[in-house]
Image (cartoon, rainbow, N blue to C red; front, side, top):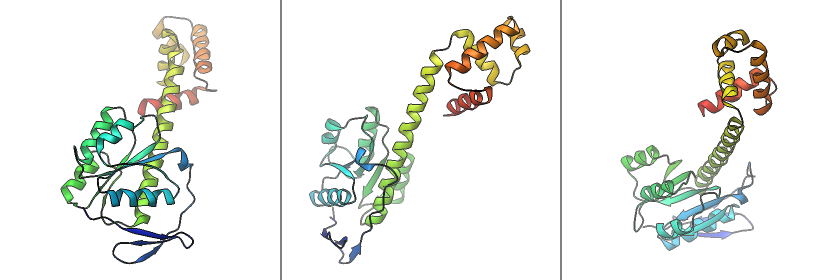
Amino acid sequence: MEAIKMTADTDNRSYSVTGGQNIDVEFEEKPFDVTQAVVWVVDDDPDMRASLTWLLESAGYSVKAYSKPTELLDHYEPDCPGCFLLDLILPEMNGLQLWQALHERGSHNPFLIVSGQADVTTAVTSMHHGAVDFIEKPFKHTYLFRRVELALQRDALERRRRLANADFHTLLDSLTPREREVMQFVTEGMLTKQIALRLDISEKTVEVHRSHVTKKMKVQSVAQLVRLVTKHTLA
């Protein structure tokens, strides 16, 4: 596997990549705190692994690099935010098989596949498996940064979505069976009188249940309740 060799002039932020050309690197301010996330790199080529680690760390990312899949599987923590940068051709299993093994262990982290032996079929397969991108070697460092940043943003958004969904279900679990029935009918647009007839209870009782629902679900109005339920029903 061909390695990308890099040397640096850290004062001028200039990198020399095999192929000869000096490239100026600008590190843009990140939209969120990347120090809380990890980029897990798996590449069996020691030069490439060292180069990727150095390049990403120079850009402010926290990196954990491994030479083979089992090392990552032994150390990976599913609750840790971040993304995977996986070489396609690896010992023991390929990058896609490694991602599947991680997924079976509860990983939801986004992943990128890197390969020096790219073909259309493999790239399409990677994307169908959910890869953020299929990056062909050699690649520009700026493109790598953009794709890693996109993967980390996706991870952050997905974690916030899962947290919000968990909070919603916690609130939902606080409702009594009758309150759930009333909430369902309310969010379907039924009027108090219609709900009372459907449940064979008084309109006043419906209003009491509806008041309990809005308080327990932490909303101020029926409109907010409808938006909340719709959002998490569609999520």
